[in-house]
Length: 145
Image (tube, rainbow, N blue to C red; front, side, top):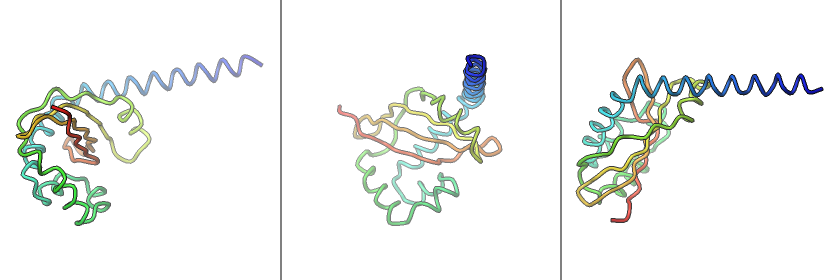
């Protein structure tokens, strides 16, 4: 009775180890380029023009977000002012591992960023397509200064 349970647990451990290894490989492969993309994208997006944000979204995200929602997001974030700098993005191993089961590769990063009006916490999920990035999901939360 215990043999099948041991085999199942062993198989689960092998799968988790493989997913962790895959995620670590993706972090190593994309971290520098992703950071550069995020800096460029935030510089562009922080003009707080709806089309600037839309131009960085994946086609799926563009289809899911109405113009009204885009204008609301831009209005909400506009008070932050222009993007100035960011800390090293922290990679989410779980997002990368789970993207193995999806249609496109996704990488998620969180990091503190500085804007004209202060600091904010940014979370961005990037879609990777032929070595280039686009925003699948994006949020900014102002932090207490």
